[in-house]
Image (cartoon, rainbow, N blue to C red; front, side):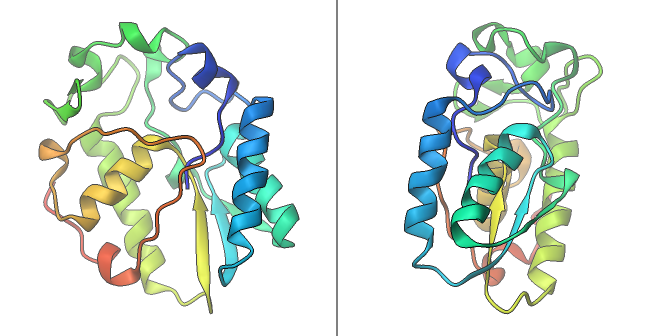
Length: 187
């Protein structure tokens, strides 16, 4: 799932791996609402990005489900380096590698940041390892929009250079099975 709405989401700022954004009251309400729906699933483990907005989401859900959570830095959003904190509307394709809803350059990177190809390798490695373990039930992964887009592309066997960059709503939930995420796609 994607974390609830953050202060920087609401302000239209590039978050990346900045740890300043926290959940808004709306984001906390989104997490609580989703937690109520998740009670119906056999979730045995929660793993979250170690960034504050994701960890806060995991804590709200974990409290309602009576589950602890583990942090994993591999689930962090893309590092946007020098672009973090700037207006999202000002982030151009030269730095992001994204134009509209398409990846146009998987190797583009903002100064001091991470390319989509680098992020894809990190995220795919996490999900490959996840597919190998048996938690005895479902695992809830609390993460960020970019990570979810990468995971969905891997499920569809779409290389990062050919990805679409569609809308990923805050507190959105996707169900992925081990058969969908266990085989890496070509980068």
